[in-house]
Image 1 (cartoon, rainbow, N blue to C red):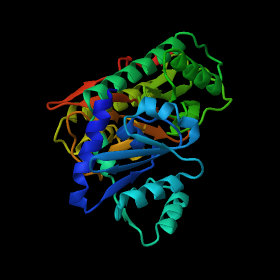
Image 2: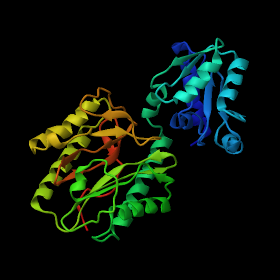
Image 3: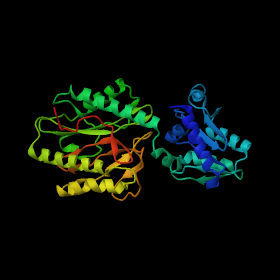
Length: 360
C-alpha cells in the first residue's frame, strides 16, 4: 500500500483531534497501528499530533520501521513508555487520547503513573475502527487476493483428500496449501469438524477421522498482505442422506437471501433477519445460534457485526462475511460462508468457490 495512503489516514486523525478536545492520540493496538503507519512489528506505539506523527519501537525494528513507515521513528532502548514520556514532555501535550478497549492494563498503568500532572489520558472509543470499516481500493484488492488464495488452497486440498483422513491432518494440509500460495498465516485456527462435531460452530480439529456418512464443516481464512479472508464450505463423506440434503438446501437458501439483502444503507440487523426468516420457514431458526456475519480486514473479526440486534448501516466499500448456519446436537451442522464487498446497489461476492456440497 502506498505511503501516502497512511499519511492521509494520519492527517484525517490529526484534523479530528481538536473536535475531540485532544492534543494527541496514542495508538498501541497492532491492527490500528498498522492501519495508520504501515508498521508491522510486534512492538510499537504511535503518537499522532497536528502536523507530526511519532512511531516508537525497540531496537529490533530500527531497520524495519523506517522502511515501512514515513512517521518520525524513535528507537527506544528499554520500555516504550520511557520514549513516550520523553516525547510528551518535549512536545508539551496536555490531553492524550487513548483506546481503552485496545490498550493493555500494564501499558495504561505505566503511562498514567508516569504522566503525573504533566498530561492526562482521555478515553477514545472506536475512532480508528470506524475509519477502518470502509476499505480503500488498495485494501479491497488485498482482500480479493487473500480470498483467492484461501479458495485455491481449499480446492487444491479437497481434490486430494480421502475418507479416513484426520480432522487435524486436513486442517494442516489446508494451512500448508494457503502458505504455499502466498498467505503469511491462517486468519484463525482452521476449523475442521466431522460427524456430530460439525454441530459445534467453532470446533477445534481433533484426531477424529472422516468416516462414511459424516457431514464435515471446513471454515478457513488466510492473511495475505495483512488482510483477512474467511470462507466456510461443507463436505459429505459419501453420498448425503435426505436429512442432510434438506438441511443443506435450507442453509444455502438462507445464505442467498442474506446476500440479496446486502446493499449500502441497509441495516445490519436486516441482513440477519433475511437469513433467519428463511431458516424459520424450514423449522431451523432455533438452531441458528450466531450472527449472520461480521466485517473483516486487518482483523478477522471487526465491525460491523451482522446480528439480530445490531443497528449499524452498511456502507459501500465494507468487506463483510455472510455465514448463516444450523446446528443440531447429536446430528451435525451446516454453515455456508462467503466474503463480500458492499456496493451502492448490492454486493460483490468475492469467494469464487462453488457452494455445492462436496462429496469425498
